[in-house]
Image (tube, one colour):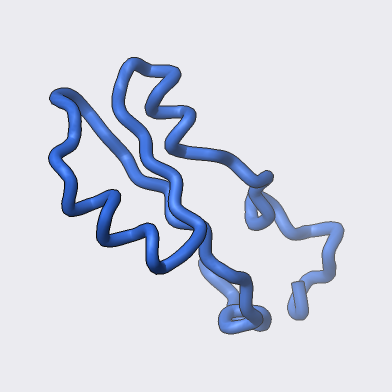
Length: 70
């Protein structure tokens, strides 16, 4: 954005998506975690057979704010 402005930024801002629910919609097992304390119990327990995915919600930052990927 810094180099080209916000009108020329393509596919860099994705809508919030619950990937655990996407996997469930496809017949797999999904897990959603918002707090660090929930992480270990969820991933140390045996998971159901089949494909699975985890969605861990993290905070935002300006770490790559001025980065340019080509």
